[in-house]
Image (cartoon, rainbow, N blue to C red; front, side, top):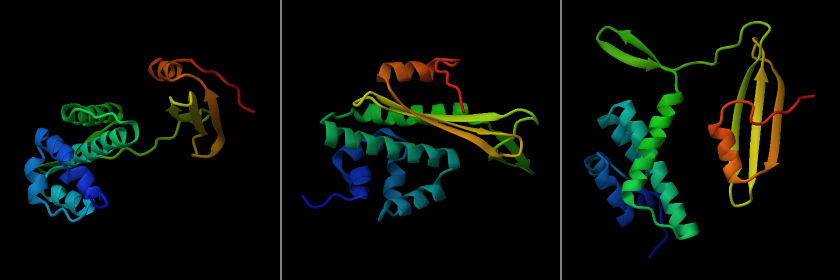
Length: 182
């Protein structure tokens, strides 16, 4: 076996072909020029609408993730699970994305939402978190902006906590963690 490339890992290998057969992109894979992933994405973009391209990208990500689980942890994922995970990622993404439909004649498109500042005298807090279950670590970040977009404060924390605790914080909205700034 030679050196594995990205197209082989995500499209051409036996495990990847099983995933694509379960998706509705199997014919697109064969019709699009697949010299590299970018060419393949451009080919699919010409044949499909944006929502399909987003799902296609999510399947690429899920396949890459499954490949890494197999290579680094020895865990093989069922191709049906890989496709289901990609669809779940897309559904979760859609749920949290506000969208505005803009009509131009008989064509419609979804307008991208821009950051909206808070009312004067208020601040907006954007947060993100990441976990490492193997090391029982979680990292949190909060960026606080006023109505002008000025970033008055940025908080970063590294916490030692179990993945179960971190998941509880994620799924339990409310004051699960409290901290005071400077």
